[in-house]
Structures are given as C-alpha cells and as structure tokens.
Amino acid sequence: MTVALMWEARAAEGRGPELLAWVRARTLTPAPLRRETFSAPQDRVLVITWWDAAYDAELPELPDPPLALCRRGVHRWRFEPVP
Image (tube, rainbow, N blue to C red):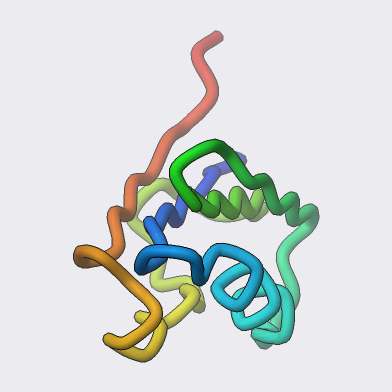
C-alpha cells in the first residue's frame, strides 16, 4: 500500500526563500520512495512524500520550522490512493 504525506507552511513576510532552503535541508530517515518540494505565491512551501506503508503507519515527518520563519503553524495531511 502507498501513503502520501503532505507538509505545508507559509513563511513569515519576505522569508519564503529561507523557509524553502530550511525544508530542503531536512532529511528523513528512512528516506521516502519519493519526495517533491513546491513553492507558491504568498511564500508557501509544500512537501509531498510517498511511502510504501499502511495509511496509519508510523513514518518520519518533517519537523516544524523555527517560529521566526513562519506566519502560522504547519499543516499536515495523509492521503491514500483511490482505486
């Protein structure tokens, strides 16, 4: 089974590049099957990781960034494929 974890944060005013660099420097152990990082207007950063695991498996997740980098708390979601 495959599960996708999504991690999304919005950077503090003007700190989008810093937040993006911070998240790209984070590693996950073990590594996911796949990892993609996105940016969007309003200094948003999104990371999606794919795992060969059950939906409720305990998996490594990206941590919260330093408070000074963000406007609000990180949003996290899990998704599973729809047959």
